[in-house]
Length: 126
Image 1 (cartoon, rainbow, N blue to C red):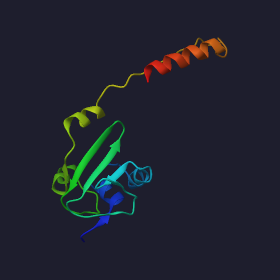
Image 2 (image 1 turned 120 degrees about the vertical axis):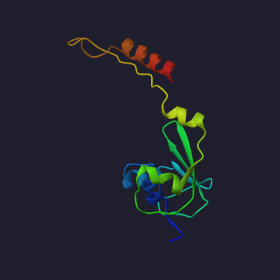
Image 3 (image 1 turned 90 degrees about the horizontal axis):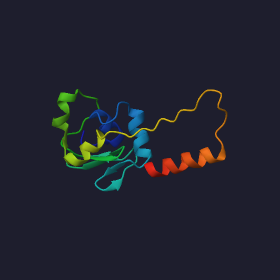
Image 4 (image 1 turned 30 degrees about the horizontal axis):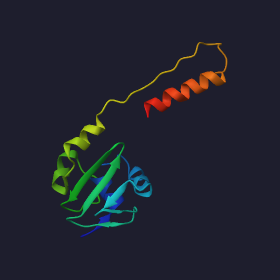
């Protein structure tokens, strides 16, 4: 076997928990193969470069060997070399800011003024 579908490969090297998640990522233009957007059926060969957008980070891997079977985490370095810079990996573990707005029970629906204030606050967070 000298090539395999990209969705199978990124699932096999444990970038996604399920094969359907890997296929959805390919369909959502989150996976690139050698710089070009890759659909799920695209074939991967040794020495190809795969880029995967997960959240705010872009992860890069070089294909060393081909496998279409999911493997244990300890075997992944034999099949894919991680080229991702540490700055991108840090983005995955960055704290997320969360705003919790609470309205008293029975206070009714927010007024137009409340809604505008809420929108202004959300714009500041972006």
